[in-house]
Length: 151
Image (cartoon, rainbow, N blue to C red):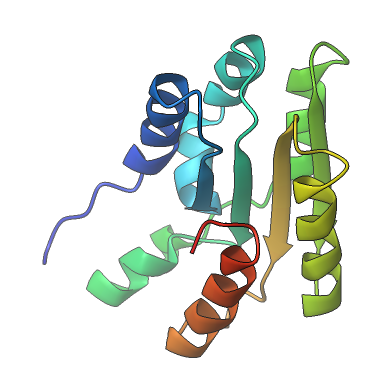
């Protein structure tokens, strides 16, 4: 593969959640992809969606590194939870949290599926930029998602 579209997932999440109002959509989105389409959070909130968004913050277009590495794959890090809080602006139901370890992730998932199940939940997972997301990570994340019915 020589081409990949890094910005499709967030818009697809918005559309699917709007069409499948009887389901709770769970999305895992990279920080680079999110930067291209962050404004969709506004529409999700306006439409009262209760999506759970896992933002994988690893400081770059990591999937693009696998295709062609270079300094252009490093992006400016944002304070993603603060951005979502600013877009939320106290209007609607939204919960943001930033996690840096498995224990915090488990707690964030429990909160999103219990106390805040009627909210849009934005969970930023901070991963060191030199860490490649591998199959072991995906197995761990999928087991966490299975606990909330998304596996």
